Amino acid sequence: MELSRILIGAMRFKNRQSAIDTVRFALDCGFNYIDNSACYCYQNPSENSESWVGEAIGHPSYQGRAIISAKCTPGNGGLELGEFIPEKGFGVRSVAQFDQVFAQSRKRLQVDRFDFYHLWTTHTLEQLEEAQKPGGWFAGLHKHAGEWDHLGITTHADNETIITFLKTGAFETVTIPLNIINTTRTAVVDYCRASGITVIAMNPLAGGFLAANEQLKELALRYLLSLEGVYPLIGFSCVEDVDYAEWILKSQRAYQKSTGQILSEVDKLIGADVPRCTACGYCQPCPERINVGASLSYYNLYKFMGNEHARKEFRNKQWEDGLRIDKCKQCGICDSRCPNGLEVMKIIKDAQEIMYA
Ligand code: SF4
Ligand code: SF4
Image (cartoon, rainbow, N blue to C red; front, side, top):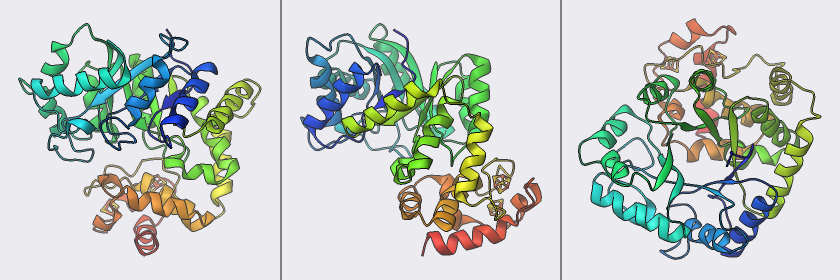
């Protein structure tokens, strides 16, 4: 079965019934890949996204219609290694732990095998090395050979680190944050296109806050659909979200704007008359591991559009190294590299003041 052009994210359901209705409606609309993890919507061992999706696809009319992806991690969701929390899929660092989490996902999702399995929330080389240790995550995965078809990795790392992950040759897909205000990982997209690796774009609506503006919401999905080989993963929370995605997809063929035109429309909406960061990424790497483009994208939305969600989302994501602009040492490297001639250090100072205020 081929992947549908838009994929189903299972992390934003409101409750069991809305999850079942949403998943079944999405499958009826032709969206077929469901990305899940043990921790999504986790309330207790029986009320969680995996169990809800399991009920949705376990019905005889829906069996065999979905491409199912599950995942777990040696990490803690952030940049560290994690303590073993089986019910949420964190800290999986031995074969026995892998066995337990893998079996748990199969049971909750009511499937015998997975179409895709992912090394999840792996953002650093140390986390990958931990997974590769003898008797670790990969050993657990290989013990279950024949019970999964394709292996992927899910990461928020920088381009260089992600490409190092992919050069291992272990992964057929990579799931990365990518959206109209965070285009800093397009180098990964180029690499994947050349290497036949599928790119799954998470955070297509930047954690949902792009949905607060109708124009940005549409441009966000159009942008991802304009990128060949990129599959937007949308965290549907209700049938209306699915309905909207179906409309976008159906009308995409008649949509005339190119990727560049979409991005310049976004620029205008966000206030391109003021010189501002376009998240091109040319100032990277920063010695403090700050992803200047991604950080300033949130800042731009808040500063020029008054989008309070952007500031909230930026603060919620402070576990991500790249967004820790408080670590800026004002070294000036980004100023010297910016092709837009921005006074980046000055802008970062302003961003620190208003985003952390
Ligand atoms: S000025 Fe700040 S953000 Fe820019 S490269 Fe130096 S530490 Fe990084
Ligand atoms: S500060 Fe300049 S170089 Fe850095 S991402 Fe923004 S526009 Fe690009």
